Image (cartoon, rainbow, N blue to C red):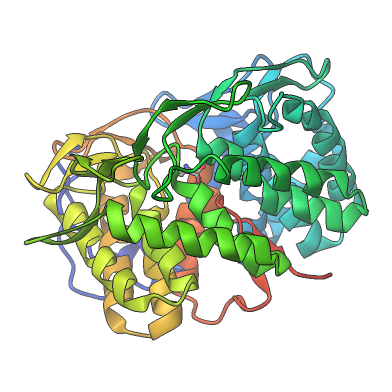
Length: 447
Ligand code: DMJ
C-alpha cells in the first residue's frame, strides 16, 4: 500500500511550486497517513537520527537543547505502533531504551517535555509492556518535580534535569494546567501519589484565580499568583488548560475536574464565543468584564470542537468545525492567526499543526457524518501538495503564498498524521477506555 497511497491523493496546486495534477479519486486516509508516516520517518532516520527533530529542506537535524532528548522518536513511537509499522516501531523503541537518558545538564521546558516525552513514554509503555519505558518515565517525572516548588504550587516554566533548579515565574494556564493526565497516569502506574498531587494542586490553584465571571487570563506569575495579562481566549497559552479540566474527569473520574470544567466552559461559551454572519467563532475578551478585545481565531483554537464533542455538545462542535474549515479554505491551511471579522490570516504560519484534523476525527467518531471525512481528505491533500518534501514534511511559513519553512515538528508524527489515520480507520481505538493527552498520546484507564 505504501507506494500507491500517494497516488490516490486528490491534490490541488500549491504555490510552493510543487504543482501536481488535480485528481478526482477519494483519498484513502488510512493508507495515505501510513505512507506519510513511513516517508517522514525515513527522512528523520536518514538525516536526523538520534536528534530531536528533522529540518527537511536543509536535510539536517535540530536539537532543542545542547543534548538530544530524542523528542521525535519518543513522540512518534505510539503512532508507529498503532499504524502497524512494526520494523520502525521496534527500531525506535530499541534506540530509546538504549540511548535515552535524562541525566543531562539542560534546562528544559516542563510543559513541552511532559506532553511530548512523558506522555509518549507512558503511552508506549502501555502499548508494549516494556518496563524500561516506565522506568524512564519515572526518572523523568522525578527530575521534573522541582518545578512545583513555587510559593503558590503552580509550576515554574523551566527546570534543569540534572540540578533540579527551576526558573521562569511568568507562565500561563496551558503550561500550568496541562500536566495532570501525564503525572496522574505516572502516579497510578508507579504508585507514587506525589506526581498526581502536585499536578492537581497546580490546576486547582490556577482555577481558584479565575475572574468573577469565571475566565482566566493568558499570563500569570506563579510566585505571586497575580495575573500578568488579563486577556482571555481559547488559543495558545490557554487552550489545553480547558482540555485537561475535562479530560482529567474522563481519565480519572475526578469530580473536582468535572465541576471546574462545567463552570469554565459555561463562561467561555457565554463570553468568548462570538456569533457572526460567517458562523460561530471564539475570539478574545477581557477576563474581568467579558468585553470583546479581539476577533482572532487560529490553528490552535481549532482544538475546541474536539473537546466539545467529548463534553457532549455536538451542536457547537459542528458549528465551530465548519468555521475552522472556512479558515482553512481561505488559504492553504489553518493560519496561526486568522481575523474572522475580516476573514484573512493575521499570523500566516501553519507549522503542520494537528488541531483541525483532531476535531474532524472526534466529530466523525461521534456522528459518523461523511462531511468530517471529506474535510480530512481536503486537509491531507493540501498537506501532500504544500508540505511534502523529498526528506519528509515541512511547515508553511505563509499559508497564503504556500512558502515553506524548514522544520518537521515532532507533533506532526505524534498527532497530525495519527489523527488523519484515526479519521480513516473508524473504531481503531475505543474512546471509552482511553483518553488522548494533548499531544495525542493515548492513555489507557487500567486502574
Ligand atoms: C502540540 O505540542 C500540542 O497539541 C499542544 O497542545 C499545542 N501545540 C502543539 C501542536 O499544535
